[in-house]
Amino acid sequence: METSIIKIGNSKGLRLSKTILEKYNIKDKVELILEKGQIILKPIALPRKNWEKEFKKMSENGDDKLLMNDVFEDENLEEWI
Image: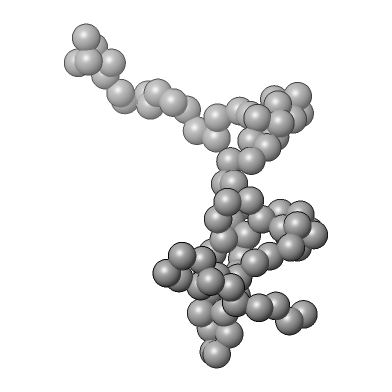
């Protein structure tokens, strides 16, 4: 696909169509990767997207148990009072 570089104030930019933005789920930011004579635009995913739904599934499946005790047998909690 060929596209034009356009003037934006004192800078220049690249206009992406609505179709491309939707297809690649591009919102407000992209990661710009410079690699071997190429410029790669990569959508920035929301790192915690759908966590609430996934945590709920974990709870329903009983997968939200501690992997180790939160209090150790030799721990003295009195010193914190």
